[in-house]
Amino acid sequence: MQPNASQPLPFQSASQPGAARTLRSLSGLIDFDCAARWGSFTLAAQELHKTPAAISLQVKQLEEVVGFTLFVRHPRHIALTPKGQELAITVARMLKELRGKVDALRGGDEEHVLRISTTHTFAIKFLAPRLGRFTKLHPELDIRLDSCERLVDVENEDVDLAIRHGIITDHPAALYHDRLVVVYSPELLAPGQQELGLADLTRYPLLYDETTEFWVRLLRTEGMPEGPFDFSRGFTNLAVAAQAAIVGQGIALVPYWLAWDDIGRGVLRMMRGASASVEYPHGYYFVHASRKASLPKVLAFTNWIQDEVGQMARSLHASLASPAVPRLQA
Image 1 (cartoon, helix red, strand yellow):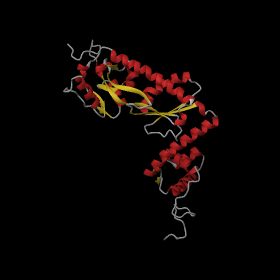
Image 2 (tube, rainbow, N blue to C red):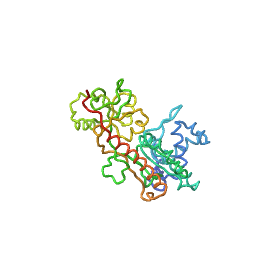
Image 3 (cartoon, rainbow, N blue to C red):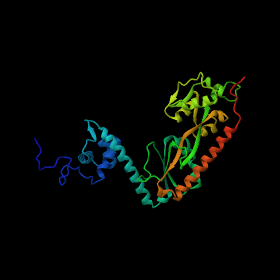
Image 4 (cartoon, helix red, strand yellow):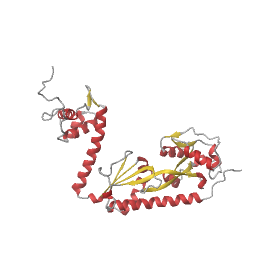
């Protein structure tokens, strides 16, 4: 049966033929978010204290508004469509930010909530282990740490400060100019051996992150371009390469900041001397909205973390100044 020309199509507004319906309520998004998380209208209904039929109706109405199917309905379960998956990610993030803002405004303590966004690796390996020191200095602040790899929009999202990774040569907001250093597990030491030197690089796999470029640069600088070297173990993340070194899978070339705590705990050793390191153009830098740069809570955090990396930089310089193990050993 052909639709009557005078009647609107399912995804059209009756007042504006050809235009999508305007989203007039968040309830459909909330029901959709809950159903997407549970993969079930029944379980979503239990969380929201509604009936499964009510959840299903809200989602159906939302599908009519957006103009595409969100779920594939099976007899015993539902599954997100590809477009439904994309929308679910956006809606979940939006609702999280909305709830966080409402909670902050309800408490009237927005100036005491500091929201920081950074990468997973930096959060796990450097920031999270040190936040206790910051909160002791500033117990009045409530820290919200969000680790993610996407680039956040600090101007429009609920973020006070972001710390991101990239090329930082001459970057005005650079946090720390790092170097790659050679590290290894003490388990690789032979009985009676105190430390490894560059001559030992041919004895173990050389662990690297995606490219051997920096290993080659170091070896050429030391006049050791030929090898034989074992580059059979590559990783897609420097933190994984460092972890592989900890368990003795080989010798790794990683940023000093990434290995600093593990070196301090004794699970990694660093080859001493500037010859066992190489310049690294990547690092971390600050990103914040211009209107938030001078907020007391943001200034307190940036000053504190700059002091933390300052201690690390001094430790690196001391290690580079230490005499290295001779490359040619008896």
